[in-house]
Length: 465
Image (cartoon, rainbow, N blue to C red):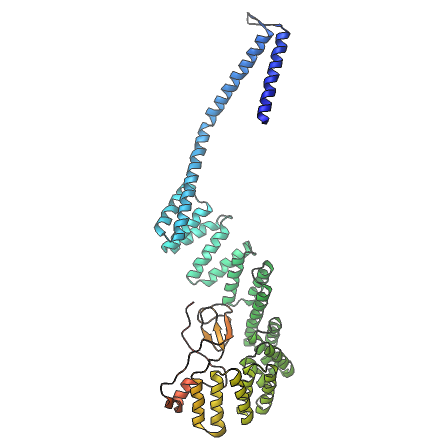
């Protein structure tokens, strides 16, 4: 609309000038080098206008001829770019589909058409990975490190390659470099945290957790638990190095951050007890016990008074009252009563435990009670037969692969997962005896029932993740 208006204004202005010149005639004389030209003012104006138009046309023609080579080059470049990105897209689709040959051919075509933009190098690296050519894949990822725009992507690819060949030292070095470039990126934080935990760099892992919590990669609850785990691991190292005071401080800090973290509570209570701080240790265990009874807590609690069996029984009976709906306290008290030869109390607690949770360990202890109290082998054998079909006792089970352990570990011994062990009952697997009379033989009984002074260690083939 604006162009039309401007055009009309220009035409109107020309018409006005033409009319004005026609109404005011005049003459123009041009004399140059002996040549004289006489004309009117109107003709002179029209001649000047015509000359201006011719010059403008000639200038546009000259400009077009001058820029034609550049335009042709730009057009060819644009065609190459369009074909290159088409090949790149085709290659990425082929790589995603697992078509190694097509992805490799497309990568070569894209590289020839586009040069070496980030996506071209990435496609070439992916094609090499699909083909199993780790050397070429690493070469492409290393080329990415030379360009600030692709350095971060190259670091990630090299980390994957390092992990693939089991070079955790190199993977950690690359993760630290990536963390410096982009400390708030979630996968960098998780990757670096995993490498630090795998290498035992607990202090460095604490800093990474702090960054992960700040950026929201980890929740505050998960960050608190991870810090407790790292403090506990440092406490173990300090104790092994002979620095018991520092070990106690770290273990206590871990317990304060995560009171439900049983290993830290057990370590802190044991170190306190060994330093003569029995009351503090007892308060520590009392708090954790009310949150979740555990046999390791009962064991360290019973040992607070040394080898006095009656004091041990009294302590464990008190512990049982703190969580009356849990069988664990009654199991611990019943076992202590057997050791103190308090048969009535032992039977009372074990029967209560059998009512709450009739597990293998409860029946084993009842069998042991029959043997210790009256030497009734037949009654003991009946309890063992009941144990063969009872529910298994809780153990530390890996949430990722299902491997079982009697002791908590920061990494699963089977799959290496970090903090994957939870205290729970494994799937029931009845331990049936082929012949009932086998229970009378010591070796057979040991096959069904192991030592009754601790939770069973279940050895089984871990489930595949």
